[in-house]
Amino acid sequence: MPPRPLLAAVVAFALAAPTLAPFALAQAPAGSRTPAPDPAGAANRIVAVVNGDVVTQAEIASRTRLFALNAGVTVTPDTLVRLEPQVLRLLIDERLRMQEVQRRRVPVSDNDVAEALAEIERRNSLQPGALVAQLRQAGVQPRVLFDQIRAQLGWGRMMRALLGAGAELGEGEVADAIAAQRARAGQSEFLIGEMFIPVDDARNEAQVRQFTDEAVAQLRRGTPFPVVATQFSQSQTAVQGGDLGWVGLDRLDPEVAAVVERMPQGAVSNPIRVAGGYQIVTLRARRQVGQEQLSTLLTLRQVFLPFTEPLDPQSPTAGQVALLERATRLSQTLRGCEQMDAQPRGGDRPSDPGPVRLEGLANPQLRQLLAGLAPGRPTQPVISPDGIMLIMVCSRETRNVAEFTPELARALILRERVETLSRQLQRELRRRALIEMRAAG
Picture 1 (spheres, one colour):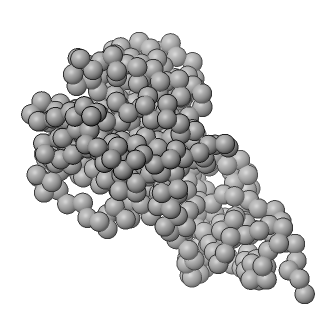
Picture 2 (picture 1 turned 60 degrees about the horizontal axis):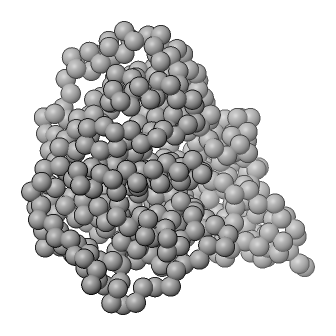
Picture 3 (picture 1 turned 120 degrees about the horizontal axis):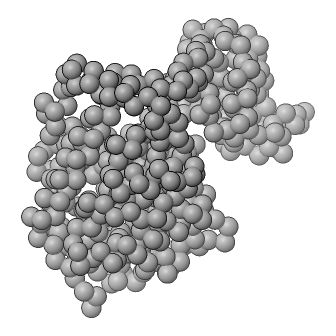
């Protein structure tokens, strides 16, 4: 008997763990192509030597292609040429950071990098190993991504270690921050994404400004802000895609505050000259301090039944039909989150994706599905190209997410301290470094 056409409608969404990943791969645009590899001599050419460590032309090209792959833009020779100066500066700073991480013996194991890589694949619904294959197909050396992940992990760990006692906040400091926030009741605060591009040498300022202008143009053409921030920002928020969170104007550089106050929601600023470099910001939303903002918070469980081969919705295999029939039976019999937890885990999707804010779900189908789902009962089978998902709401709570809690106060204070320390140390590493630039020969 031929498989029944039960899988013709595919809903491509799933809940992933809410941990942060430094990249989000976009689909390559139609008609894009990977430039032919550079001749061996050109690719291996040493462009810079940083305290004895070399940066090659191949690394610069790979990092540029990595950005283009993330942004979903066509990789052309012109793109490589335009981005090369800024990519080179970023690779030099990355070498300096990693050298300092190693000097201070901050551990970043191969397993740490592998776990971060696996998280990127999970968040992008990729099978294990698919990311490396995708990188190679785009002409990106996988080691370039591995090195970037290693440097980000190591630098973040080192910053927390260097803060030392500064990371231990007293109750008085937290109480003062909460009191200051309450005193601003009625004033505006802003949900902001940011990028910081340093100017380490006044002789390079024109090149940096040219790059920031190009970055703004890309953002205004639709390139996602988190993609550009992750790849090029030197702020500590880069690992969160530039997400600065809700801040008042007094928390921003005066030059940035003057721009943000006049920005319409959704806008991307021109490059703003601040101490040490240029900042680009986007205004995602604004609200008044103290204004109640109710949100629905969900705790969930999910069961994922993976396909053994990709789904063809028009011609599912007998095994895929059987899997759907099994998922349908489960959706009719499972009751309560304990029963969901007891199900065998399939694939690499977590059973508990963590707290989820209903209004923050980007997929409208998923948002609508969960909004009307009674706690303790699973959804009907949700079909994606790589498997079938059942989702259950365990609890639903309405909370004021605009409340400035002690946890938020601590996070804000620590983020500002880490950012200040990071910029100071990066400038010091640049000042002490022996950097030799090699001209093309």
